[in-house]
Image 1 (cartoon, rainbow, N blue to C red):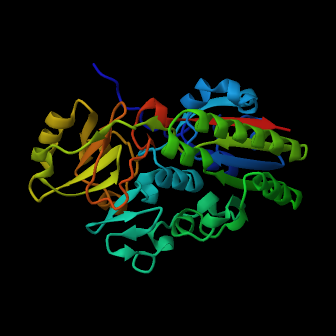
Image 2: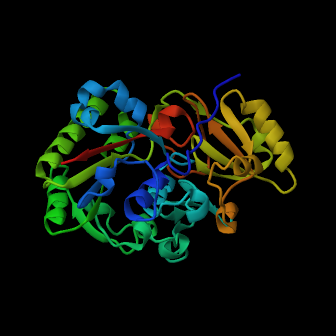
Image 3: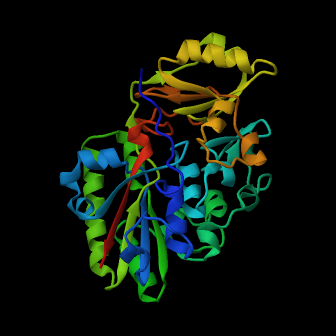
Amino acid sequence: MGPVPITPNWGGGCIADLMPALLDPRADDQLLPAEVVDASCVVVLVLDGLGWLQLQERASLAPTLSSMAGGSITTVAPSTTAAALTSLTTGTAPGEHGIVGYRIDVEGEALNMLAWRTPRGDARERIVPEKFQTIPAFLGERPVVVQNGAFMRTPFTRAHLADTRQHGYWTLPTLPVQVRKAVAAGEPFVYAYYDGIDKISHVHGFGEHYDTELAAIDRLIADLMMLLPRGTALVVTADHGTVDCSSGETGLDSSVSAMIDRQSGEARFRWLHAESGYAKDLLAAATDKHGDRAWVRSVEQVLDECWFGSEVTDVARSRLGDVALVARDHWWFVDPAESNRTKLVGRHGSLTPEEMLVPLLSFHS
């Protein structure tokens, strides 16, 4: 019996449960300590790419994070930024909000969620971000969002942070400054996002660069704690963890690729779209040829096991493929049609503990 996939812990142990716990007065769960939920001001800091297991392995480099209360929760499936951040901000599963991955099938074209491009080019006019994802962020509240100034007007920001009040920062030390200013102005809730550790792990994997970045983030959090007035709560979480995939490139077996029309998803959670009438044969071939490196599931199995949540809309269902290849260990699957096929070192998207477990830590001043 091999390892089993870690599926999202919907309903109290997943990042999708965080905003309802903080913003919905009717919410009744134990996700966070009462003093955090009842604080006069709450700051949520999302550290893109900081997995719980990676943090635990480097606890000595992050004394501030390590001193905070809390533990691990799960991210969503797939464990990738576009799906996870949208679940975090909307408080819903990907099956409901419809951003079901990094490259999403939209009427036969793969839409890159972060670049908002298809093979035909810029898709902002053809696929309007605010119409692609319509669930309001933060339960309809309009909080201050502090993020890299370069992200403030991107299509993905429009899709998962529509109608929020954007405050940009341009260097890491100025992130706490922007948060402090918002809190000092009387904001009861501030959402902040930093993507540095995700970038470092993609390019360098785990080593000196990663450790230095984590230590810098820990110092930033210590600085932020010093700046926050008494009565403020700080919550730190992440969207996914990462695995080193520097030597795990895998192409589809010819018997598998012969039965597919196209691929979508990401390198560690590939959706195969079958040629008409070949879905069952494709599942059998993919299991036979790639079952040693991936959890292979039909879309029906994925939905039955609630990987994308208990509710999957017709729109979200239409964006999925027929067979999922969900990489185990350090493998990743190549899609020749993907325009950016950079051999990244760190990758994510699958359902391993390294990718699925993220921190949920809190501090109350």
